[in-house]
Length: 497
Image (cartoon, rainbow, N blue to C red; front, side, top):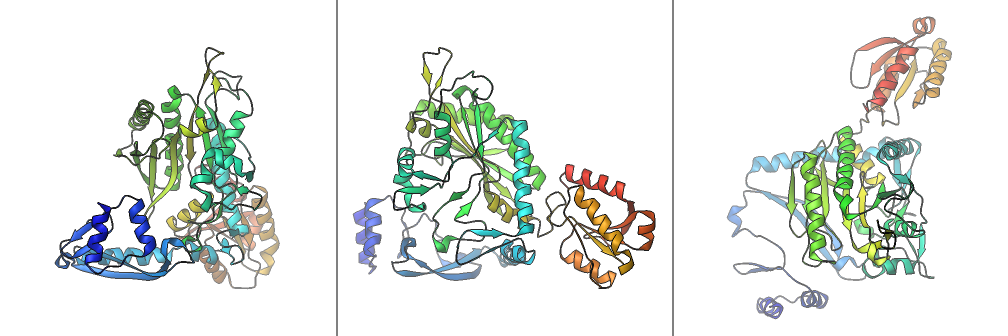
Protein backbone atom coordinates (compact mmCIF):
# COMPACT_ATOMS: atom_id res chain seq x y z
CA UNK A 1 0.00 0.00 0.00
CA UNK A 2 1.19 3.52 -0.77
CA UNK A 3 0.14 4.64 2.71
CA UNK A 4 2.39 1.96 4.21
CA UNK A 5 5.32 3.25 2.16
CA UNK A 6 4.78 6.82 3.33
CA UNK A 7 4.54 5.63 6.93
CA UNK A 8 7.78 3.67 6.56
CA UNK A 9 9.57 6.71 5.17
CA UNK A 10 8.33 8.91 8.02
CA UNK A 11 9.32 6.31 10.63
CA UNK A 12 12.88 6.53 9.36
CA UNK A 13 12.90 10.29 9.71
CA UNK A 14 12.52 10.88 5.98
CA UNK A 15 10.43 13.93 5.07
CA UNK A 16 9.42 13.56 1.42
CA UNK A 17 8.83 16.76 -0.51
CA UNK A 18 5.15 17.68 -0.78
CA UNK A 19 5.21 17.29 -4.58
CA UNK A 20 6.95 13.93 -4.10
CA UNK A 21 4.06 12.77 -1.91
CA UNK A 22 1.61 13.73 -4.66
CA UNK A 23 3.51 11.64 -7.20
CA UNK A 24 3.56 8.60 -4.90
CA UNK A 25 -0.16 8.92 -4.20
CA UNK A 26 -1.10 9.23 -7.87
CA UNK A 27 1.23 6.76 -9.55
CA UNK A 28 2.46 3.19 -9.32
CA UNK A 29 5.81 2.88 -7.55
CA UNK A 30 8.70 0.47 -7.09
CA UNK A 31 10.21 0.20 -3.63
CA UNK A 32 13.42 -1.59 -2.61
CA UNK A 33 14.34 -2.20 1.03
CA UNK A 34 17.75 -3.53 2.05
CA UNK A 35 18.20 -3.44 5.83
CA UNK A 36 17.43 0.11 6.98
CA UNK A 37 17.59 1.49 3.40
CA UNK A 38 14.27 2.25 1.72
CA UNK A 39 14.68 3.42 -1.85
CA UNK A 40 11.88 4.34 -4.23
CA UNK A 41 13.30 2.88 -7.45
CA UNK A 42 13.22 -0.20 -9.66
CA UNK A 43 16.34 -1.71 -8.11
CA UNK A 44 17.78 -4.20 -7.53
CA UNK A 45 20.27 -3.31 -4.79
CA UNK A 46 23.24 -5.31 -3.54
CA UNK A 47 22.90 -6.69 0.02
CA UNK A 48 25.87 -4.69 1.34
CA UNK A 49 28.90 -2.70 0.20
CA UNK A 50 31.28 -5.68 0.42
CA UNK A 51 30.05 -6.54 -3.07
CA UNK A 52 31.54 -3.28 -4.41
CA UNK A 53 35.05 -4.21 -5.55
CA UNK A 54 35.73 -1.31 -7.90
CA UNK A 55 33.95 2.05 -7.83
CA UNK A 56 34.38 5.40 -9.57
CA UNK A 57 32.53 8.70 -9.28
CA UNK A 58 32.11 9.96 -12.84
CA UNK A 59 30.59 13.43 -12.47
CA UNK A 60 28.16 15.59 -10.51
CA UNK A 61 25.55 18.06 -11.66
CA UNK A 62 22.57 20.00 -10.39
CA UNK A 63 19.05 19.21 -11.52
CA UNK A 64 15.73 20.94 -10.92
CA UNK A 65 13.05 18.88 -9.21
CA UNK A 66 11.00 17.25 -11.98
CA UNK A 67 12.82 19.38 -14.57
CA UNK A 68 11.06 22.57 -13.46
CA UNK A 69 13.46 25.53 -13.18
CA UNK A 70 11.13 27.18 -10.65
CA UNK A 71 11.42 24.25 -8.23
CA UNK A 72 14.12 23.08 -5.82
CA UNK A 73 17.63 22.45 -7.13
CA UNK A 74 18.93 18.95 -6.34
CA UNK A 75 22.41 17.48 -6.58
CA UNK A 76 22.86 14.56 -8.96
CA UNK A 77 25.92 12.31 -8.61
CA UNK A 78 26.90 9.83 -11.33
CA UNK A 79 28.93 6.77 -10.36
CA UNK A 80 29.60 3.25 -11.56
CA UNK A 81 30.72 -0.01 -9.97
CA UNK A 82 32.27 -3.18 -11.41
CA UNK A 83 32.99 -6.59 -9.85
CA UNK A 84 36.73 -6.07 -10.41
CA UNK A 85 39.15 -3.22 -11.08
CA UNK A 86 40.17 -4.57 -14.52
CA UNK A 87 36.70 -4.09 -15.97
CA UNK A 88 36.40 -0.68 -14.34
CA UNK A 89 39.69 0.41 -15.92
CA UNK A 90 38.51 -0.86 -19.32
CA UNK A 91 35.31 1.15 -18.95
CA UNK A 92 37.16 4.32 -17.90
CA UNK A 93 39.54 3.88 -20.87
CA UNK A 94 36.54 3.52 -23.21
CA UNK A 95 34.98 6.70 -21.82
CA UNK A 96 38.24 8.63 -22.25
CA UNK A 97 38.54 7.34 -25.82
CA UNK A 98 34.98 8.45 -26.55
CA UNK A 99 35.72 11.96 -25.24
CA UNK A 100 38.38 12.41 -27.92
CA UNK A 101 35.76 11.88 -30.62
CA UNK A 102 32.86 13.80 -29.08
CA UNK A 103 30.92 15.12 -32.08
CA UNK A 104 30.62 18.55 -30.45
CA UNK A 105 34.42 18.92 -30.42
CA UNK A 106 35.04 17.35 -33.84
CA UNK A 107 32.24 19.40 -35.39
CA UNK A 108 33.86 22.66 -34.30
CA UNK A 109 37.36 21.48 -35.23
CA UNK A 110 36.24 20.49 -38.74
CA UNK A 111 34.02 23.59 -39.10
CA UNK A 112 30.87 21.53 -39.61
CA UNK A 113 28.37 23.12 -37.23
CA UNK A 114 27.94 25.26 -34.11
CA UNK A 115 25.23 26.30 -31.66
CA UNK A 116 24.49 29.87 -30.51
CA UNK A 117 22.88 30.88 -27.19
CA UNK A 118 20.38 33.03 -29.10
CA UNK A 119 18.88 29.83 -30.53
CA UNK A 120 19.57 27.01 -28.03
CA UNK A 121 18.98 23.51 -29.32
CA UNK A 122 18.87 24.64 -32.96
CA UNK A 123 22.20 24.13 -34.69
CA UNK A 124 23.85 26.12 -37.48
CA UNK A 125 25.35 23.93 -40.21
CA UNK A 126 28.34 25.52 -41.91
CA UNK A 127 29.15 24.86 -45.61
CA UNK A 128 31.14 21.65 -44.96
CA UNK A 129 28.50 20.41 -42.50
CA UNK A 130 25.80 21.22 -45.05
CA UNK A 131 27.54 18.94 -47.54
CA UNK A 132 27.26 15.96 -45.18
CA UNK A 133 23.70 16.89 -44.18
CA UNK A 134 22.60 16.92 -47.82
CA UNK A 135 24.52 13.71 -48.60
CA UNK A 136 22.65 11.87 -45.83
CA UNK A 137 19.29 13.09 -47.13
CA UNK A 138 20.22 12.28 -50.73
CA UNK A 139 21.31 8.79 -49.63
CA UNK A 140 17.86 8.10 -48.18
CA UNK A 141 15.99 9.84 -51.01
CA UNK A 142 17.79 7.76 -53.64
CA UNK A 143 16.22 4.67 -52.08
CA UNK A 144 12.69 6.13 -51.99
CA UNK A 145 12.16 5.71 -55.73
CA UNK A 146 13.36 2.10 -55.65
CA UNK A 147 11.27 1.24 -52.59
CA UNK A 148 8.00 2.86 -53.67
CA UNK A 149 7.95 5.89 -51.38
CA UNK A 150 6.43 9.24 -52.40
CA UNK A 151 8.15 12.28 -50.93
CA UNK A 152 5.72 14.89 -49.60
CA UNK A 153 6.00 18.29 -47.92
CA UNK A 154 3.69 19.24 -45.06
CA UNK A 155 3.11 22.50 -43.10
CA UNK A 156 5.22 23.36 -40.06
CA UNK A 157 2.45 25.02 -38.04
CA UNK A 158 -1.12 23.84 -37.38
CA UNK A 159 -4.11 25.01 -35.41
CA UNK A 160 -4.27 23.20 -32.06
CA UNK A 161 -7.47 21.48 -33.23
CA UNK A 162 -5.24 19.08 -35.19
CA UNK A 163 -3.21 18.24 -32.08
CA UNK A 164 -6.39 17.73 -30.06
CA UNK A 165 -7.60 15.21 -32.65
CA UNK A 166 -4.25 13.38 -32.69
CA UNK A 167 -4.00 13.34 -28.88
CA UNK A 168 -0.77 15.37 -28.77
CA UNK A 169 -2.49 18.35 -27.08
CA UNK A 170 -3.42 16.18 -24.11
CA UNK A 171 -0.23 14.14 -23.89
CA UNK A 172 2.58 16.17 -25.49
CA UNK A 173 1.69 19.88 -25.26
CA UNK A 174 4.47 20.67 -22.76
CA UNK A 175 6.99 19.58 -25.41
CA UNK A 176 5.47 21.79 -28.12
CA UNK A 177 6.01 25.42 -29.06
CA UNK A 178 2.50 26.90 -28.96
CA UNK A 179 1.53 30.40 -30.10
CA UNK A 180 -0.95 32.55 -28.15
CA UNK A 181 -3.48 32.10 -30.95
CA UNK A 182 -3.29 28.36 -30.25
CA UNK A 183 -1.20 27.41 -33.24
CA UNK A 184 1.54 24.86 -32.60
CA UNK A 185 4.81 24.11 -34.40
CA UNK A 186 4.67 20.45 -35.31
CA UNK A 187 6.70 18.03 -33.13
CA UNK A 188 5.62 15.10 -35.34
CA UNK A 189 4.76 14.59 -39.03
CA UNK A 190 2.16 11.86 -38.56
CA UNK A 191 -1.01 14.00 -38.00
CA UNK A 192 -0.24 16.03 -41.13
CA UNK A 193 0.17 12.84 -43.14
CA UNK A 194 -3.22 11.69 -41.86
CA UNK A 195 -4.72 14.88 -43.34
CA UNK A 196 -2.99 14.12 -46.64
CA UNK A 197 -4.43 10.59 -46.69
CA UNK A 198 -7.87 11.92 -45.78
CA UNK A 199 -8.09 14.73 -48.33
CA UNK A 200 -9.65 12.46 -50.97
CA UNK A 201 -11.19 9.00 -51.29
CA UNK A 202 -8.68 6.14 -51.20
CA UNK A 203 -9.10 2.68 -52.68
CA UNK A 204 -7.36 -0.58 -51.89
CA UNK A 205 -6.77 -0.87 -55.66
CA UNK A 206 -6.52 2.73 -56.77
CA UNK A 207 -4.87 3.88 -59.97
CA UNK A 208 -1.15 3.74 -59.23
CA UNK A 209 -0.36 6.50 -56.72
CA UNK A 210 -3.48 5.96 -54.60
CA UNK A 211 -3.11 2.19 -54.34
CA UNK A 212 -2.48 0.79 -50.87
CA UNK A 213 0.05 0.54 -49.41
CA UNK A 214 0.57 4.31 -49.62
CA UNK A 215 4.01 5.43 -48.40
CA UNK A 216 4.47 9.11 -47.52
CA UNK A 217 8.07 10.25 -46.82
CA UNK A 218 8.79 13.68 -45.33
CA UNK A 219 11.99 15.50 -44.30
CA UNK A 220 9.85 18.25 -42.74
CA UNK A 221 11.42 20.35 -39.98
CA UNK A 222 10.15 19.48 -36.48
CA UNK A 223 10.38 21.52 -33.26
CA UNK A 224 10.22 20.13 -29.74
CA UNK A 225 10.41 22.24 -26.60
CA UNK A 226 13.09 20.21 -24.83
CA UNK A 227 14.24 21.42 -21.42
CA UNK A 228 17.46 23.43 -21.66
CA UNK A 229 19.22 21.01 -19.32
CA UNK A 230 18.33 18.08 -21.58
CA UNK A 231 19.90 19.56 -24.74
CA UNK A 232 22.96 17.50 -25.74
CA UNK A 233 24.81 18.47 -28.89
CA UNK A 234 23.12 17.15 -32.02
CA UNK A 235 21.64 14.13 -30.23
CA UNK A 236 19.03 16.11 -28.24
CA UNK A 237 17.85 19.27 -29.98
CA UNK A 238 14.82 21.52 -30.41
CA UNK A 239 14.87 21.83 -34.19
CA UNK A 240 15.58 18.80 -36.39
CA UNK A 241 14.70 16.96 -39.58
CA UNK A 242 13.72 13.28 -39.35
CA UNK A 243 13.75 10.95 -42.35
CA UNK A 244 10.13 10.35 -41.49
CA UNK A 245 7.77 8.07 -43.40
CA UNK A 246 4.27 6.80 -42.75
CA UNK A 247 2.86 3.79 -44.52
CA UNK A 248 -0.91 3.37 -44.79
CA UNK A 249 -1.79 -0.23 -45.54
CA UNK A 250 -4.27 -3.04 -44.99
CA UNK A 251 -3.82 -5.48 -42.09
CA UNK A 252 -2.94 -8.22 -44.59
CA UNK A 253 -0.05 -6.08 -45.89
CA UNK A 254 1.64 -5.43 -42.53
CA UNK A 255 4.16 -8.28 -42.78
CA UNK A 256 5.40 -7.36 -46.26
CA UNK A 257 5.68 -3.68 -45.39
CA UNK A 258 7.62 -4.45 -42.21
CA UNK A 259 9.97 -6.72 -44.13
CA UNK A 260 10.55 -3.88 -46.60
CA UNK A 261 11.46 -1.49 -43.78
CA UNK A 262 13.80 -4.05 -42.16
CA UNK A 263 15.52 -4.52 -45.53
CA UNK A 264 15.92 -0.73 -45.81
CA UNK A 265 17.45 -0.60 -42.30
CA UNK A 266 19.83 -3.43 -43.12
CA UNK A 267 20.89 -1.79 -46.39
CA UNK A 268 21.65 1.57 -44.75
CA UNK A 269 23.34 0.27 -41.60
CA UNK A 270 25.61 -2.11 -43.52
CA UNK A 271 26.86 0.87 -45.53
CA UNK A 272 27.43 2.90 -42.36
CA UNK A 273 29.31 -0.02 -40.79
CA UNK A 274 26.88 -0.50 -37.90
CA UNK A 275 25.87 -3.68 -36.14
CA UNK A 276 22.37 -3.60 -34.71
CA UNK A 277 19.92 -5.48 -32.50
CA UNK A 278 16.19 -6.08 -33.02
CA UNK A 279 13.56 -6.32 -30.29
CA UNK A 280 9.83 -6.89 -30.65
CA UNK A 281 7.97 -4.83 -28.03
CA UNK A 282 4.53 -6.27 -27.32
CA UNK A 283 1.23 -5.09 -25.82
CA UNK A 284 1.69 -3.06 -22.60
CA UNK A 285 -0.62 -3.14 -19.59
CA UNK A 286 -2.34 0.04 -20.75
CA UNK A 287 -3.30 -0.19 -24.39
CA UNK A 288 -5.94 0.94 -26.86
CA UNK A 289 -7.83 -1.38 -29.18
CA UNK A 290 -8.88 -5.01 -28.92
CA UNK A 291 -6.62 -7.94 -28.03
CA UNK A 292 -7.38 -9.83 -31.24
CA UNK A 293 -6.03 -6.96 -33.39
CA UNK A 294 -2.93 -6.69 -31.18
CA UNK A 295 -2.23 -10.40 -31.45
CA UNK A 296 -2.54 -10.36 -35.24
CA UNK A 297 -0.21 -7.37 -35.46
CA UNK A 298 2.37 -8.93 -33.14
CA UNK A 299 2.24 -12.18 -35.14
CA UNK A 300 2.82 -10.24 -38.38
CA UNK A 301 5.83 -8.45 -36.87
CA UNK A 302 7.25 -11.71 -35.52
CA UNK A 303 6.83 -13.41 -38.90
CA UNK A 304 8.60 -10.52 -40.64
CA UNK A 305 11.44 -10.66 -38.11
CA UNK A 306 11.81 -14.41 -38.61
CA UNK A 307 11.95 -14.03 -42.39
CA UNK A 308 14.52 -11.23 -42.10
CA UNK A 309 17.10 -13.83 -41.01
CA UNK A 310 18.26 -11.61 -38.13
CA UNK A 311 18.33 -12.61 -34.48
CA UNK A 312 15.74 -10.83 -32.36
CA UNK A 313 14.29 -10.85 -28.87
CA UNK A 314 10.93 -10.05 -27.28
CA UNK A 315 10.42 -7.11 -24.92
CA UNK A 316 7.22 -8.19 -23.22
CA UNK A 317 4.84 -5.35 -22.47
CA UNK A 318 7.15 -2.62 -23.82
CA UNK A 319 5.08 -1.65 -26.88
CA UNK A 320 3.49 1.76 -27.33
CA UNK A 321 -0.10 2.15 -26.09
CA UNK A 322 -1.29 2.47 -29.70
CA UNK A 323 0.48 -0.58 -31.17
CA UNK A 324 3.44 -3.00 -31.05
CA UNK A 325 6.82 -1.89 -32.36
CA UNK A 326 10.26 -3.11 -33.36
CA UNK A 327 13.08 -1.38 -31.50
CA UNK A 328 16.34 -1.12 -33.44
CA UNK A 329 19.52 -0.20 -31.57
CA UNK A 330 22.86 0.27 -33.34
CA UNK A 331 26.38 -0.23 -31.99
CA UNK A 332 29.14 2.09 -33.16
CA UNK A 333 32.92 1.59 -33.40
CA UNK A 334 33.23 2.18 -29.63
CA UNK A 335 30.55 -0.46 -28.90
CA UNK A 336 28.09 2.16 -27.67
CA UNK A 337 24.39 1.60 -28.33
CA UNK A 338 22.06 4.18 -29.86
CA UNK A 339 18.39 4.16 -30.79
CA UNK A 340 18.02 5.50 -34.34
CA UNK A 341 15.65 3.62 -36.62
CA UNK A 342 12.05 3.15 -35.54
CA UNK A 343 9.22 0.93 -36.77
CA UNK A 344 5.86 1.22 -35.02
CA UNK A 345 2.37 0.01 -35.85
CA UNK A 346 -0.43 2.46 -35.07
CA UNK A 347 -4.12 1.54 -34.97
CA UNK A 348 -5.16 4.68 -33.10
CA UNK A 349 -4.36 7.67 -35.34
CA UNK A 350 -6.36 6.21 -38.27
CA UNK A 351 -9.28 5.88 -35.84
CA UNK A 352 -8.86 9.34 -34.34
CA UNK A 353 -8.80 10.89 -37.84
CA UNK A 354 -11.53 8.52 -39.07
CA UNK A 355 -9.39 7.38 -42.00
CA UNK A 356 -10.82 4.80 -44.40
CA UNK A 357 -10.49 3.34 -47.88
CA UNK A 358 -12.93 1.54 -50.15
CA UNK A 359 -12.56 -2.23 -49.96
CA UNK A 360 -13.32 -4.91 -52.59
CA UNK A 361 -16.97 -4.14 -52.01
CA UNK A 362 -16.85 -0.44 -52.96
CA UNK A 363 -19.80 0.28 -50.71
CA UNK A 364 -17.78 -0.90 -47.74
CA UNK A 365 -15.20 1.29 -46.00
CA UNK A 366 -12.29 -0.20 -44.06
CA UNK A 367 -9.78 1.31 -41.65
CA UNK A 368 -6.10 1.35 -42.71
CA UNK A 369 -3.19 0.51 -40.44
CA UNK A 370 -0.50 3.15 -40.07
CA UNK A 371 3.22 2.29 -39.82
CA UNK A 372 5.60 4.92 -38.45
CA UNK A 373 9.09 4.46 -39.91
CA UNK A 374 12.49 6.18 -39.77
CA UNK A 375 15.89 4.87 -40.84
CA UNK A 376 18.29 7.61 -39.76
CA UNK A 377 16.01 8.71 -36.94
CA UNK A 378 16.90 12.33 -37.54
CA UNK A 379 19.59 13.74 -39.81
CA UNK A 380 21.10 15.64 -36.85
CA UNK A 381 21.31 12.62 -34.55
CA UNK A 382 22.74 10.35 -37.26
CA UNK A 383 25.23 13.08 -38.20
CA UNK A 384 26.54 13.10 -34.61
CA UNK A 385 26.67 9.31 -34.31
CA UNK A 386 28.50 8.90 -37.63
CA UNK A 387 30.99 11.66 -36.79
CA UNK A 388 31.96 9.81 -33.60
CA UNK A 389 31.68 6.37 -35.23
CA UNK A 390 34.18 7.35 -37.95
CA UNK A 391 36.27 9.29 -35.38
CA UNK A 392 36.18 12.32 -37.67
CA UNK A 393 37.54 10.38 -40.67
CA UNK A 394 34.60 10.52 -43.08
CA UNK A 395 34.44 7.89 -45.84
CA UNK A 396 34.91 9.31 -49.33
CA UNK A 397 31.25 9.15 -50.42
CA UNK A 398 30.11 11.14 -47.36
CA UNK A 399 33.16 13.36 -46.87
CA UNK A 400 32.88 17.16 -47.06
CA UNK A 401 36.58 17.29 -48.01
CA UNK A 402 37.06 14.62 -50.64
CA UNK A 403 40.24 15.94 -52.26
CA UNK A 404 42.73 18.79 -52.18
CA UNK A 405 45.26 19.75 -54.85
CA UNK A 406 48.69 20.78 -53.57
CA UNK A 407 51.03 22.43 -56.12
CA UNK A 408 54.74 21.91 -55.42
CA UNK A 409 55.63 25.47 -56.44
CA UNK A 410 54.14 28.63 -57.87
CA UNK A 411 54.97 27.40 -61.38
CA UNK A 412 52.55 24.49 -61.06
CA UNK A 413 49.67 26.54 -59.63
CA UNK A 414 47.90 27.09 -62.98
CA UNK A 415 47.81 23.32 -63.55
CA UNK A 416 46.64 22.77 -59.94
CA UNK A 417 43.71 25.13 -60.54
CA UNK A 418 42.89 23.30 -63.78
CA UNK A 419 42.88 19.96 -61.93
CA UNK A 420 40.65 21.48 -59.22
CA UNK A 421 38.17 22.70 -61.83
CA UNK A 422 38.00 19.30 -63.55
CA UNK A 423 37.27 17.48 -60.29
CA UNK A 424 34.72 20.13 -59.27
CA UNK A 425 32.92 19.81 -62.61
CA UNK A 426 32.74 16.05 -62.06
CA UNK A 427 30.72 16.70 -58.89
CA UNK A 428 33.24 16.18 -56.07
CA UNK A 429 34.27 18.42 -53.18
CA UNK A 430 37.79 19.67 -53.90
CA UNK A 431 40.01 22.51 -52.73
CA UNK A 432 43.43 23.79 -53.76
CA UNK A 433 46.26 24.97 -51.49
CA UNK A 434 47.91 27.95 -53.21
CA UNK A 435 49.88 29.07 -50.14
CA UNK A 436 53.65 29.47 -50.25
CA UNK A 437 54.29 26.73 -47.71
CA UNK A 438 56.60 23.82 -48.43
CA UNK A 439 54.89 20.80 -50.00
CA UNK A 440 55.57 18.66 -46.91
CA UNK A 441 53.66 21.17 -44.77
CA UNK A 442 50.80 21.34 -47.26
CA UNK A 443 50.43 17.55 -47.22
CA UNK A 444 50.56 17.45 -43.42
CA UNK A 445 47.90 20.16 -43.08
CA UNK A 446 45.69 18.32 -45.56
CA UNK A 447 46.01 15.11 -43.55
CA UNK A 448 45.05 16.90 -40.33
CA UNK A 449 42.05 18.46 -42.08
CA UNK A 450 40.94 14.92 -43.03
CA UNK A 451 40.98 15.26 -46.82
CA UNK A 452 40.49 11.77 -48.24
CA UNK A 453 42.88 12.24 -51.16
CA UNK A 454 45.80 14.66 -51.44
CA UNK A 455 46.78 15.37 -55.04
CA UNK A 456 50.34 16.67 -55.41
CA UNK A 457 51.22 18.30 -58.73
CA UNK A 458 54.56 19.62 -59.95
CA UNK A 459 56.07 20.45 -63.32
CA UNK A 460 56.33 16.78 -64.29
CA UNK A 461 52.61 16.15 -63.57
CA UNK A 462 51.70 19.34 -65.45
CA UNK A 463 53.63 18.20 -68.51
CA UNK A 464 52.10 14.70 -68.52
CA UNK A 465 48.54 15.62 -67.42
CA UNK A 466 48.76 13.45 -64.31
CA UNK A 467 48.51 13.78 -60.52
CA UNK A 468 50.40 12.17 -57.65
CA UNK A 469 47.73 10.67 -55.38
CA UNK A 470 48.24 10.27 -51.62
CA UNK A 471 45.66 8.62 -49.38
CA UNK A 472 44.78 10.34 -46.09
CA UNK A 473 46.22 7.75 -43.67
CA UNK A 474 48.87 6.16 -45.86
CA UNK A 475 52.42 7.23 -46.61
CA UNK A 476 52.72 5.80 -50.11
CA UNK A 477 51.43 7.44 -53.28
CA UNK A 478 50.66 6.58 -56.90
CA UNK A 479 50.57 8.54 -60.15
CA UNK A 480 47.28 8.60 -62.11
CA UNK A 481 45.93 10.32 -65.19
CA UNK A 482 42.98 12.64 -64.67
CA UNK A 483 40.72 10.25 -66.55
CA UNK A 484 41.69 7.34 -64.29
CA UNK A 485 41.42 9.50 -61.17
CA UNK A 486 37.85 10.58 -61.96
CA UNK A 487 36.91 6.99 -62.83
CA UNK A 488 38.37 5.87 -59.50
CA UNK A 489 36.43 8.57 -57.58
CA UNK A 490 33.24 7.49 -59.33
CA UNK A 491 33.71 3.85 -58.35
CA UNK A 492 34.55 4.77 -54.73
CA UNK A 493 31.44 6.91 -54.38
CA UNK A 494 29.22 4.29 -56.03
CA UNK A 495 30.52 1.62 -53.63
CA UNK A 496 29.96 3.92 -50.59
CA UNK A 497 33.66 3.75 -49.68
